[in-house]
Length: 234
View 1: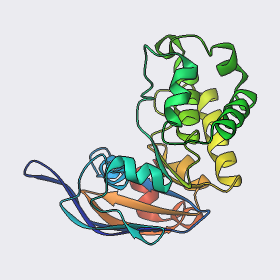
View 2: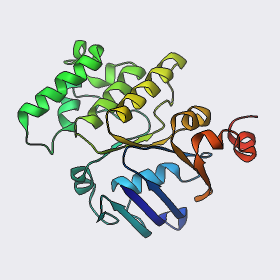
View 3: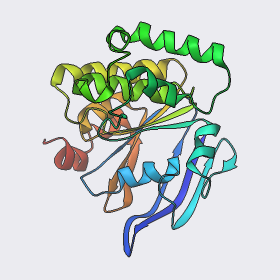
View 4: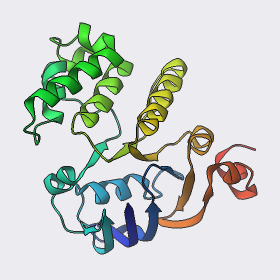
C-alpha cells in the first residue's frame, strides 16, 4: 500500500532523514519508534506532503506521491493526525469536523459519518457548538482523530497520539486506534511510548539519527536487547 524508498529530508543544510525505507501493507498497524530528533515526525510530514523530500521516492497505492501536494495526498486517502492535537481553536467542534471532509462532495455520506463520530464520542456531540480551544486535552485528541477520519482515509498517520495525556486517556486513545485499524483503516504511528507502540503494532521500525537501524514484528522487538536497553528501560 505504502512504500518509502531512500527518503531524504532536510531543514536547510541539516539532514533530518537520511535514506529511510519503510513498507506498509494494507490493513497493517506499523509504528516508528526512536529518540527525539530521530526523524520520525519528519518522515510522516514527507508522506503527507507537508515537507517536500530532498531525495528518495514515496509510492501510495501504485501512485508516486513524492512531489504531490498535500491536497492530492489527502484526496488519495492519506490523513495526517499531527503531534500536539492541532485543532482549530477558535472554530467549533462541528466546524473542525467539517474541515476534515472539505474535499468530499457526498453530503449525505458526510452527515452519516459525522453522526457516527458523535455516536462514538458523545462528549463531542455535547460540545459541538463549543470552540475547540476550550476543550480538555483528551477531548481535543478525540476531535483531532475524528477530524482525520472525516476524510474517509485509507491510511492514517498518527504522530505522538498519547503525548501529554493522562494515563487513563492514553489507554483510551490506543483503544480508539486499535478500533480504527479493526475497521479496515491502515495505520502508521509515531509514538514515544515504545512499549505500547510495539505491543500494538504488526511491525515496527526503529529510527536513529535519521536512519532505520532495526525492523521487525512488534512482539519480536519487545524482546530485542538493544530495544529493551535503549527504549524500554530494561
